[in-house]
Length: 612
Image 1 (cartoon, helix red, strand yellow):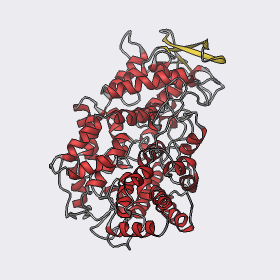
Image 2 (tube, helix red, strand yellow):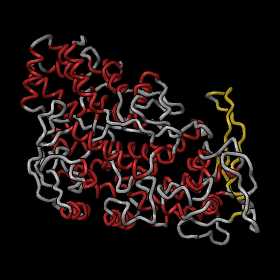
Image 3 (cartoon, rainbow, N blue to C red):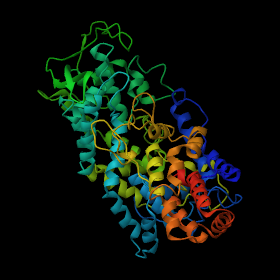
Image 4 (cartoon, helix red, strand yellow):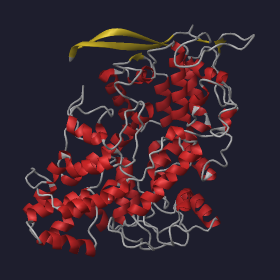
């Protein structure tokens, strides 16, 4: 396929505006500064992706104006009640509802991590039933792709990975942990039950998935207290949204006043009391011979309970400052939960007690709601999502009453992930257009949810959506598993074994579930990959068997029909009249085969394809 200068220039113009990051390290920012940075990024992306009505016509995306601009947000459920009340109170107008094509693509990407096929788009557009959006949401929630997408989410949360800096699950432990997560998601297991099972997991980590929660947090190069600390800090951050690591080395007073007022009032002893819940945990490694790799030096761990285990303040080395008791106090710390001081019942396994107390705490449900809200909207009601300040629950959230109402709903519906996601997806707030029409856009509108805020697809979604758009599937080689056809089905971000595909996916910041977080920031590297990588270029060629371009050209030589079908396959919508004419003129001006490839190439490199 020839790469003419106009095509390259067009692709660069489409791709470059996606970069909106400021390069600042998030660990150098206060939570408030990190939140404000996210707001700026969302505002910048939204305006690049879909300029509002007062802006000049965008050449980057023709999302179309909402058909019915709103004077106030109509109420589909209680989410709209609270969002609309704040908009009305502060005189901020929402944009209109999204068109069917925009809604459909958004719902597919958010709920399943894939784009719809052309046939699915056409069927949805043709459906005239008034409840078709709700029915489509239910269909997506019941799909196997939903299970893949939310298995990936929970795997990120618990950091399931075969190798990390300080722990070794090995691929056997990683795979069985992945299977437990996916089985739990597929069966609709309540979220609180999943967390309790993970926290109390015991047995051989190559055969018992949940045993790997402990193995993943093991600290190999320090005293055992470092492992207990890891377990406490990880579980508090991931399941409570509280950055408890801040008080693991010294008490909060004097250094957390601008970071977290709640933790400012907590001491290192409070942290140790949380870590003490894990002090009965015992993990013993024994040599294991893997038939698939008999020469490897592998340890399989048995995770169990030692009732005599205790958290002792007797260390001077390791990854934390020395642990020593205060004058006149014992060097043994007894467990007590951070938020309420609750302790294990008599004879109760301490990790079982920890899971029971943690999942019964309202902050557990509140944090889960906030995580899921961010997955659907691109920003949490509390930002950062892992920096709740429990002294500011009426001021830190953008919509405190809504956060509490969603928390009530989540608890009442049995901690069902699907139920909460359905509530969010069926709200009119979620279904707003990404184009802002009421007036000139103001970045201060971001926390009002007056429009949909596009963000770049996560790394695996970029690859899988490209495979669907071009009709050229992948086949990933994953240790200990059959060939995996979708990036979203890989058990951790260190897979797959195909170097070219893995390198391409890694360019989109999928992280490593260790010290590099997943990110949807954009970069020039990503733009170059989309324009030059063989994972893209090969898929759009007519010569590639069953590619979308080859199938379209086999069925028609009409430039208008070619344009329509490539737009549907790639952007999940038909072209506007202007887009259609531009494409037709381009296709007619040269060899149809080459120029059809060029057209899909440009569409794949557009913001509209890469953002959701």
